Amino acid sequence: MKTKVYLDNAATTPIDERVIESMVTVMRENYGNPSSTHSVGQAAKSIIEGVRRQVAKNLKVQPGEIIFTSCGTESNNLIIQSCVAHLGVERIITSPMEHKCVAEAVRDAKTRNGVEVVYLRADSNGEISPESVENALKQSDKKTLVSLMHANNEIGNLLDLETVGALCKTYGAYFHSDTVQTVAHLDLDFSKINIDFASCSAHKFHGPKGVGFAYIKRTSRLKPMILGGTQERELRAGTENVTGIVGLGKALELCMDNLELYASHMTEIKRYAVEKLSQAIPEVRFNGYSADLNKSLYTVLSVLLPFKNPLIGLELDMKGIAVSQGSACSSGASKPSMVMMMLLDDEQLESTTPLRVSFSHQTTTEEIDYFVEALTGIYQSSKIEKTNVEHR
Ligand code: PLP
Image 1 (tube, rainbow, N blue to C red):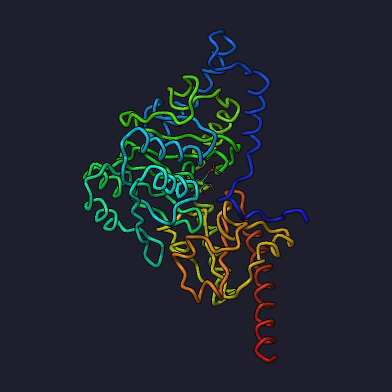
Image 2: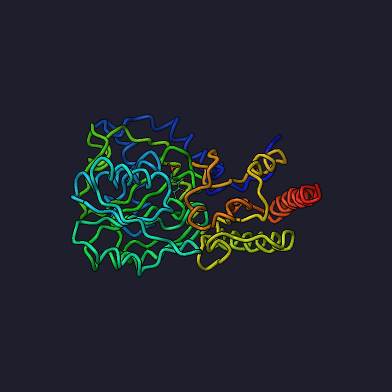
């Protein structure tokens, strides 16, 4: 069945037609290798540098602090691996709720390099308190990296970057935040935050897949993990993905030009979804601070359904609705995600079903109605099934 309703925008977003057009033009007209010294190469180089300046202006950082990569995963790996390999980081403070690409890079630093890892406990809403960050920072003089994501990709909880950044400054720790879910959705100003490293992925904001960037503070002296040529300020070897970088720039421009409009639309959509779901399924709950519009990102709503149905994603898919049962990277797994294991007790894990619904500026209230109607049908069937089991 053709997907009628796409509600999995935290996994990826549909690419904007104007982004495609910008990329096709560059693909046709700017085939030069940006490292070539002739004019064909230099034309491609100047296109990349234009996007670098645009990104830097947007985050209020220096162009030389933006390093284009292939994705958010690569950016996070580059930052964590190089902090350990080249900056003498011996200790990482992080949380069990990070995206798999951060979690695995940290785990690898522990097993291969003997880095001490401190996992901060989140409260029952999935919040990491600044006090817990400070307590962990206080406990050791080892060179430390704090790695905490800005918006959680499963529940949308937001971290207060300013406060955590200030603590890192006080205790002389590096601060990395995975900002993959927030770049182009929030107005980030890194000139006002003590942050050393951040990451971005274009496909999360209607850009192409296979391109992202790492923000690397100039003074941090990170070194490359991919070796070869001198591309990307000698921090990431390999011929640049000129087309992808142009797409990233165009997608960022479109989102930033419409930031307020898109944000208020998605905020309304989220409010509407919470209201409709609560009316249709009175026992429904929302995970973490997902339903709190002040404490979570407007793109993500994590729903906790009052019945167990591991196949719900498939059932909704058959009705033409694309949602996620966790993050895209773990949704194929039968185990509950780490985030859900942190938030839910054993009984809840046994008797409920988490569902991540995520919006874009293209999402409409009609689509939410269609989704809620489909979900209500599944909920009613689950009630009938439960009654039948009880009377058997
Ligand atoms: N970090 C977060 C918070 C994400 O949501 C994702 C993608 O799901 C990534 C990192 C990885 O980004 P990419 O798909 O570009 O590798």
